[in-house]
Length: 251
Ligand code: PGA
Image (cartoon, rainbow, N blue to C red):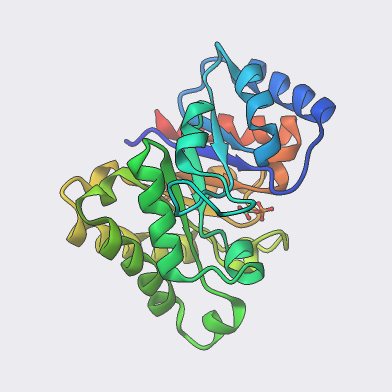
């Protein structure tokens, strides 16, 4: 069975003091977890969390990355800069960036490429809105989002992580049922299989109100290889319970 991956997405939350308490509690509490664990933190805190996590098994992630190498792109952060800080993962194409910052499928694909070129694993987010689900378009939407990333990244596609995040489940307390999530994960898996030489390497995470209470049943689904956790990653006891569920499911 695949070793699961649990990635926290802090979004725009944190402070120097709060980060220190949270990272220490998570790193200590996870001990020798049987799953991989990362926290994706706001850019200004990457250096702080890089120091706090040193010597632990907790991996560091960013929440975005520029598609550009370097230069006159005010406000952007390059993959090389992330790598220099010891960043292992970068979320790309989160629905909040697609929605509030106009990120297109093509831009998301280019960002994934820039990350891969510098040894940063992109966590590529895909997912449908409530209107799209109700119109029966879920499969078309996630396949279209995924196809753009496959098209631009070719053979490197087996090096990415995918996160299926139904937009209607993010931060709403409404979780996809394990069956709803599994159905979409299975079709993403089939799409990746057709495009990749090592599809078994690709982790497909579920995200959208995953919490301490529902993590175990979601993670028991055959094609759910981990979770991308927003709200529950800000509370150490909740995040640790999800890590424990993932550890148990990884064995
Ligand atoms: P949530 O967020 O767990 O708070 O729903 C998940 C995400 O947006 O990655």
